[in-house]
Picture 1 (cartoon, helix red, strand yellow):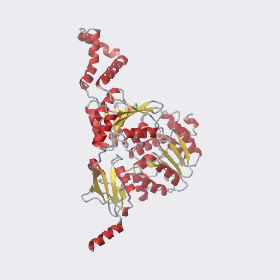
Picture 2 (tube, rainbow, N blue to C red):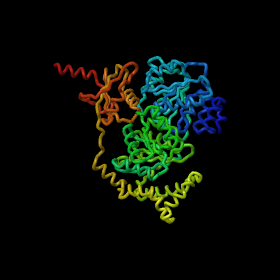
Picture 3 (cartoon, rainbow, N blue to C red):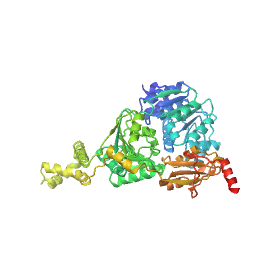
Picture 4 (cartoon, helix red, strand yellow):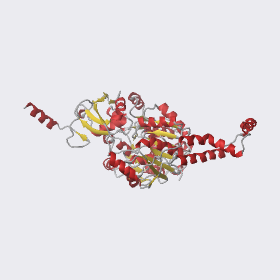
Length: 563
């Protein structure tokens, strides 16, 4: 099937043709005619990187009434990065449709500019849940006339704590809208949304639920936690032509790993939420042009990346939510090519691998971390291959050859080859001389677990100046934290919602990041303030993660004290 057979109009096909696309992906082939021909709600399951933006964007663009200046389509997505990427794609698709307007709205940017853009009119609004709800409450974004509500990466929005925001937005949209839900996985909360807010939706699925891509090989290396970075370097050295993404949990870890790789001479750089859009574009251009071999990124920052020929995805840390693994691994093995998803795990994560095997229905191969001898051999033959296949520009090099011959005439053929090979080879020989074995056996892993126990995150208590009277609950606060910190998977502990303010526990390693992220942050017109809490933690009466103070019980305690 070609795009010409999908039912799309000439002005849309022209843009697609200019982009070099001829054949739709499986999800596009199934979804585009469905949306064009049916007004039924739709649940579409497909892995990351299968072309979902074009799958919903192309038919909705065609069906949009250009003369109607009301917002006709709302696209909700989990992150600023993905929102900007969707916006860019829609702008490209509508290149030959004069007057078509799409506006992105997201947190972490001046809301005044987004208000101004919305007032100019927009056919499609692409937004993150938090900022979208804020603009709805300000009565700037009006959804009473929308015809399509699109939830992209719906599972990821729920993972980031946006359940309450999604519910509030969905409840405020017209009943006669068409809802299109796109997701890589189908957790229970997605099924709940489909049941509560969709009308007998049709279902389209490319691949099985939560299943990894068919042409991706899954491997893991078990090392001690302290050897994780050394293992990463050896994996890179064993794959001299690597072109991939290294996933880290946090911005701090992303910066640290990228800085170390660059200092050690690797073609690498970092992509994280602290970069300006200009810096991000600079890094991404270098990566797309393959001037970088490894891009070190957080899950959130990588959301907008659209590169089809990655050879590897490396999990420097496994994600806390194992379904995120499906998103990560889906970034390689695209467009019919094969790929490798590698996980560097420590001695306590063997169970996670078994859980991933069950979830993805894929076999994960345990690989030994390569030693110095193997790496040197691999690098040696890689160098020989480069020398053999290098293009020789005789016109440019001929003038220098007489001097070169004279300089090297004392070397016979064998000695000359040895000298050329040793230029690169000696570096690896020197580095990996007496290199230690980084591997940990399953038996050693069990002994180490038994000796060290499970370990705990050290939490810091924070105070925030919003509470139940501001319509805040635990899920809403969790989503807010994720949004302002760009969803960096900071571990959040207990949350206590009081009337005028709230408390939450977070990994103390990210104290500075959390305090910085909430500076000059607003909920509507209300300025948010987060500080370290110095008081005692509220009593946890039920052992639950989220606790709410019992007002009647507090009153009774005060009466008993007075008496």
